[in-house]
Length: 539
Image (tube, rainbow, N blue to C red; front, top):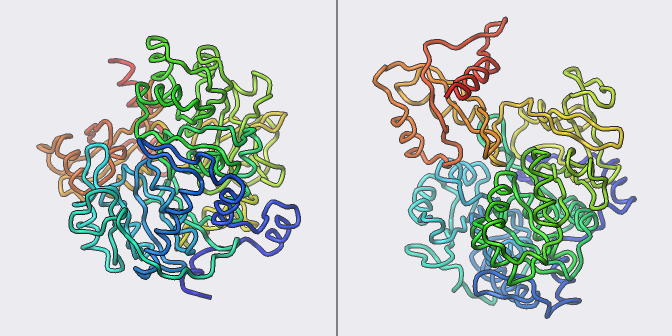
């Protein structure tokens, strides 16, 4: 076994055989998927991105060019490559080229900065880092220089656009012969956990398990070659990639329209021009879109399905979406670790408005358990644990964490508090893990606490969620100071200088003399949450 494979936890042989015998895993790779599309729908429009309009055949040609160029650079099977590209057509040509080689994309998000990117490169021993020159007013090239200086394994920085001191992605060219393709059982890429402990954990997904999720999602969403998907969320995020996302659209031969912004002005124009039929949003975007639609009166007549996920969706806002946009709402509750739940398109209104759906199939096992892992009666709130054809059995290089995150019989502890309805649908009630869901962006309190504790003026810190009408939750850091001259603005600047992603920087900082404690002497984050809620309510 290679050193790389030794850090990836396989499915138990009996479960893997069962999933194959039932047709959940069909031995197809992501490269096979694209080849089939070229064979069957080569001249059908695959991707629209700004002025770029690629058919499946043109996409495949770009993939072949990059696969040969990457091979010439020495990128080969199982090599890790950190991909931090915005929503653009090249995101797909890059990742499909890596899929073809059996090299493994690590899907970083555009918002990640030095702290996260250097960790991804070091932890995975990445050989390459692929970026755009600039996006959203941020220049990624200086970031790449900083990351390369602290990442010994990093051999290549490839840039889409003006490459500066690095190699330009768009001019790479080679006739290098391609290696044998990967197997469906191979790891295909790494996604990132929302993370409740320290830096994000890396999630190894195989071709088999991901295509199972993609295929099931496409069937549930009733996609066809006529489907047109608007990608507004970050393209590498699991929701936008596979639930059913862009890859689900490619699976059926439809069209993906990339949007670099979630601004109503931009997306409404794209929906109207490209006759978009389906899109996916996080809850904070919904009222913004609805208010803009009311005033702008755009042509959204082609839009058939709006998915909402990433955080619990208010039932009143859900009803408003259906009423004002005149399309079907689908609630989605899933995780990059595998399990995805959907309300169905023909479900009763009560289920669509008030639940977060049910799994793709009965072999996506879900249990609602108490603190001792004992099964709870239907309707009671408990911890969600799950096992199934798309749910991993371990994070990459995280043996100690895996021992806590998975049960002895292979169920993943999601950290979600849920209740299950009589129909088998899940209602998300909150988080058991120490995590903040900031409008769909998951923040590990512990990760940010560790960074703040390194500041010489901080004696102790506890970060909790505080309610927010727009994002659902924001973060509040309670700080015990060593130095009473320390200001909130100093700590914010400190975190920015460290290179922490902007969404992880606390939205509010409260200085406190001492933390409230539980009966056993631990910091009571429950009381801290109550304190900040009371302060917000009194304003």
